[in-house]
Image 1 (cartoon, rainbow, N blue to C red):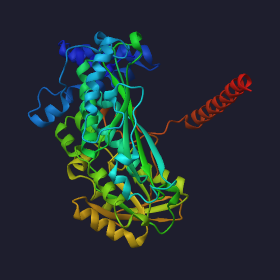
Image 2 (image 1 turned 90 degrees about the vertical axis):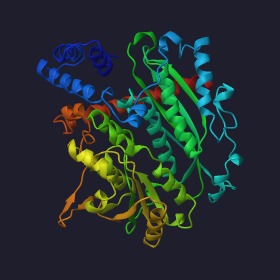
Image 3 (image 1 turned 60 degrees about the vertical axis):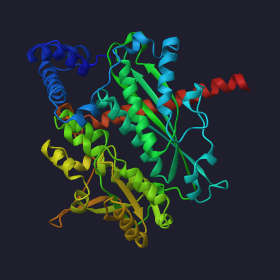
Image 4 (image 1 turned 45 degrees about the horizontal axis):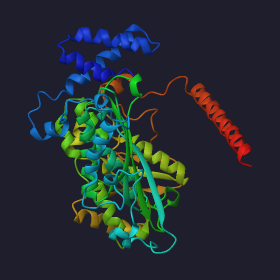
Amino acid sequence: MSDLEGLTRKLMQKGYSDAEIVERLTQEYLDYKDITNFRAKQLSEAVLEECKKSDLSSLSDGFIKDLLSINRADITIGDQGVGCRGAGDFFVHKLISEFSGVDTEAFLSPRSLDDAGAVRLRDFASLRSIDGIDGKEQIIVSKMEGIHSRLSDFPFLCGFHVTRAALRDLYVKGAIPISILVDVHLGDDADVGKLFDFMSGISTVCEISKVPLTAGSTLRIGGDMVIGNRLTGGIGGVGIAGTNLFARRNIHPGDKILMTEGAGGGTISTTAIYSGNHEVVRETMNIKFLEACELILDSHYKNGIHAMCDVTNGGLRGDLYEINYESNCGVTVYEEKIRALVNEKVLKLLEKVGVDYLGVSLDALLIYCSEKVAEPIISDLNQHNIKCAEIGYVDDSKEVAMIFEQKESKKILPKFRESAYTKIKQEVGEETPEEKQEMEENIEKAAIKALEKRKQIIDYIKHFTE
């Protein structure tokens, strides 16, 4: 692994000139990619620009600076032996387990330093609001959410947003979250303090949402074979749902589509930081999505809800397209109503940096429901200071039609990539490659070969077990 961002920041700290840094990065690109020198230089300049704009040294806002800064231990992951399962590793994990010490404690928590964690359903009073929880109809809902890779240098924010995102995906299926699990990998040269800041962000959400952190894994990226300080990994979540699972397949023509306000999470934070607009990160520090779901799951109108989804990867244009495919329906939505639900500062940021707000994660809640419960939902959420409005309806067109302010209707399709929300993404582009068909054919062949391999392995194992 060649960590280009880490390398750039290190060269900046050492006082290298812009030209020297671009020259070094250009060579790194040429070592790994079959591209021209001109193209390698373009990408290198984009990396340097983002590193300079996201530098924290000039920030005057104490809150943002504290939020994004790391309380360093000045001991690297490699030096401490984290992930090597020795005494140094055990010591750090005892400290990590303390981050699980929130008000809602697990039956078998990380403090036990056991092989796994566990919860007892009877310990969660909020489960009583789920229909069928006392019978055999309850459903275990699970989710694995990967971290936003560009937040590696801002681990508290990274941990906060990935945990909140995992909980979102449990809630939208009508589940009450009961467990959070952590999988984190750090480069050999990462500071141990980075691990603690990441865990602090995770446990902040656990504390506020009253969901226990039950288990986890901490490893180095590539062991001794990789240098760098990158952080990667993900969050697992487990929840319990009753008989009313808000699945996309329950959507049908005539349903109303509601949407709550959105201020974004990891993607918007990344856009803000890497464009030099750090103050916008403040807008993402909330749990309104989770609060909205809690209100809905504890309401009298929840049986009128057919499905819920979060506006996430690929943005609204991507989500609506995927939802249509799964539900075999179409939708008509109103752009003006959608725009009004995007946080004002976030929308201003996206417009400033030239990002299509319909193509990025907004941390907004989509609710597909019957007409009779639409107004009660909107009224209830608004009374709890959560903006919500009807943005459209479901039809049988099998398409996404968006009505603009001038009453103009356009068919909306997802782009090959989500909206390019950083400089480097803009350099890479959003366009569909000319080799799309060939690429898809090769991918399909690879998938078929993988299925064949699976069958061969199953047959091999069965041969020794029969």
